[in-house]
Length: 73
Image (cartoon, rainbow, N blue to C red):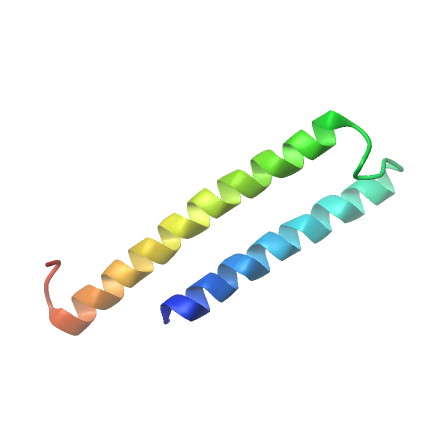
């Protein structure tokens, strides 16, 4: 997996999470603009997703580098 493919997966995951939160908000009858708790939850979820996905991308790049060069340096 290249770095571009990995970042593409990050974008896809974030987009899916936004869609899931929007559908959940619509089902509950609460628009996204209303309620600070919903917006705060969305931002918190996005933040953790980005942190975890960035870590995954960096780990994958490290593993690929080790495979190519046989060393961590």
